[in-house]
Length: 105
Image 1 (tube, helix red, strand yellow):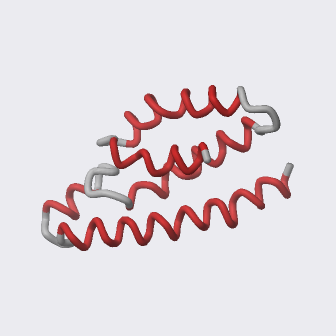
Image 2: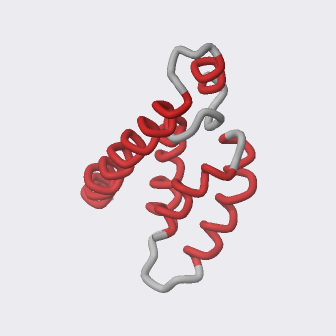
Image 3: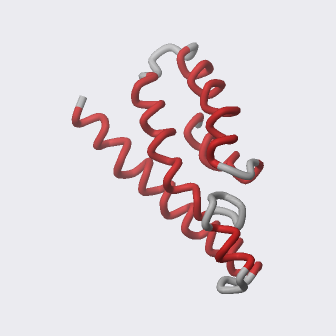
């Protein structure tokens, strides 16, 4: 649930740096207070998601406004594709990366 929050709350931030500075410490602090949560795995899942969440909005990363502002990808399409690819990448993160982290520990 914390990884889900961390990933999708990025809609409210204009950069990955501001998102990490404001949200990551809170998510890790809350996760460390929950019995049975492996904080190392939680941190890795959150950090791995940073590269993936750049697709979810026209202001999510540095290159996104260039694609959006140039008209290369239309406003409606940008949001639609952001949701589609955000869901696909998030499912991959939870369905592939999370089990993989469990196997290498």
